[in-house]
Length: 157
Image 1 (tube, one colour):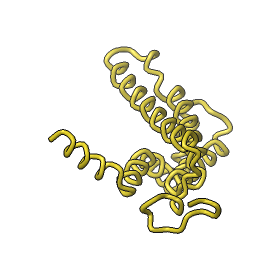
Image 2 (cartoon, one colour; image 1 turned 60 degrees about the vertical axis):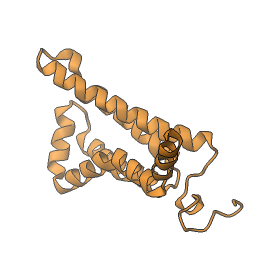
Image 3 (tube, rainbow, N blue to C red; image 1 turned 135 degrees about the horizontal axis):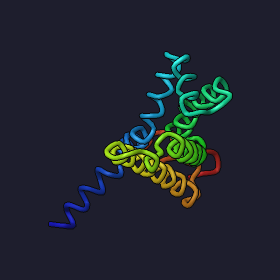
């Protein structure tokens, strides 16, 4: 009974579509943030200024580039490890700057701490993506993944 449940779980959980949905879930907030910042660029600059960062304009632009470029690397499979490390670093820095829960009074501290540690979880997820791609020696391209229906990269089975 347990082996059939395990076999069924393995069959479903290892589908390429499940992997893609998982990666999309990790990247969703960044894509949404990039869209919002593009649609309200003055708001993006105001957000940077709110956190005391300067110069605000290039930081806002770099943030938008990060929120689109790194997820694109992750979701396309091209240099997925680089996109994952990029978002892990970005998220770690942004979390320390934006979720300084230790400076807040209760009860605000508890809500900010929850947000802080949720972002720590995202950092962990991105590190896991990078670790997997780098430790398996994969170049992690959609064309080289079994079951993708695409041709393998040159020199790869």
